[in-house]
Image (cartoon, rainbow, N blue to C red):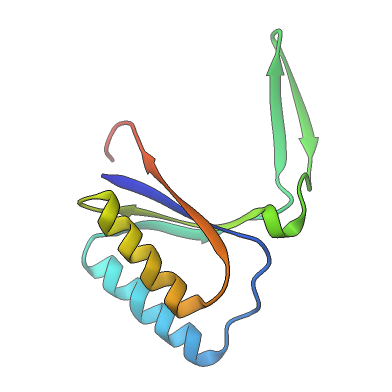
Length: 109
């Protein structure tokens, strides 16, 4: 089962110890074949809307900075509970913040 884990809002830059702990966590998940992709996202983004055959493109930002999705991790987990546990470990390293976990449906890569 694949899950997309996202984080929202502005986060303080991590200190050196947090970076080292996060690096070890990412390495562990990569070695285990759990982490498929990870990265940061431009909070401004670009919105595309399709209506009546016409596509409109609008540059962001669209929401308050604290509501924008700013990073993601795509993981392979045995269950939703495992995905939640991995997310809990992430938040224990990073500290305060908000995020979401969504199951990804579709063909496996």
